[in-house]
Amino acid sequence: MDCIFCKIVNGEIPSDKVYEDEFVLAFNDIQPAAPVHVLVIPKKHIESVVALTEEDDKLIAHIFKAIRVIAKEQGLENGFRLVSNVGADGGQSVKHLHFHILGKKQFTENFG
Ligand code: 5GP
Ligand code: ZN
Image (cartoon, rainbow, N blue to C red):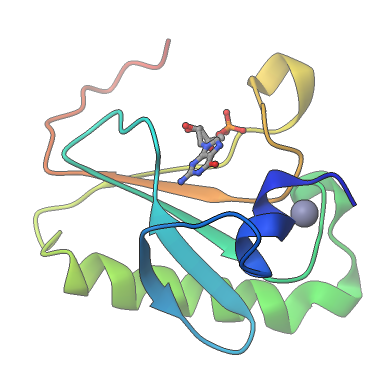
């Protein structure tokens, strides 16, 4: 499959890994938008949040557990922004579910 993140999972494309377990991989974004910018992805190819099914309930819980571990490891006790872009209007450029952890930057209440 022609998916950049699947290629990162199988090692075809190198990445700067910060966390890995059986189901989840996390690596630094190639174009960081904040001093900490980690992408957290399931190893399984799922297109986006809207492609999730009940079968993935455990996986989602697992991803959020990984996010908590990563946030702690990255020293984000003061908070961070968690983003998952969905589809065209959401500005999703890679069609493999991912969560952006953006930290060590003061965000405002505004989106834009
Ligand atoms: P999206 O816009 O789909 O929410 O986010 C995709 C993110 O993946 C972008 O922030 C982009 O910089 C990052 N990205 C795209 N290709 C690669 C890559 O090959 N390696 C890494 N580490 N990040 C990538
Ligand atoms: Zn994929």
